[in-house]
Image (tube, rainbow, N blue to C red; front, side, top):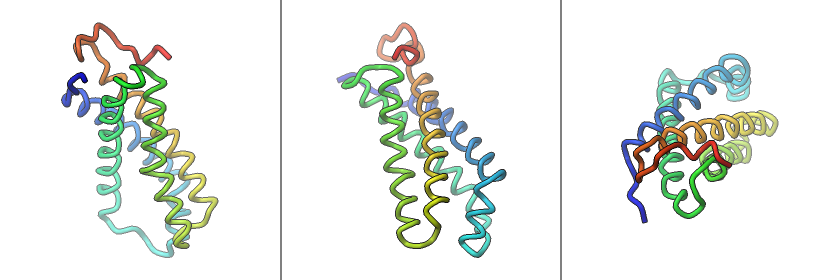
Length: 149
């Protein structure tokens, strides 16, 4: 088994986190934010934004780390990155959103839309993070294989 380059995991995770967080901010400010607040019945605490952004970076780093682990089994490239992005989304976004709906905190349509947008964020972020991970020099890699499907 090849050794995982943790510097590339962190770098790819930060890039993926930037993509996830910027997309989340845009979506929150333009659409989802007022719906969440209306359904919750109160404003979110001041700590919600920095904590959410921290979560965005942590889930992105986890996705790139998972990509680094699974690429030896499934191969380098976009297909593996998309599989990892979907897996990370399912565990980190879809299941929690289902729980929020099941507990009656938010309605189904809001959770469905939020999950769908989260899927797009996670897939794009994981693709970008995997691309950064595969930069030349990782495991003797001579170039990026993420563009090859």
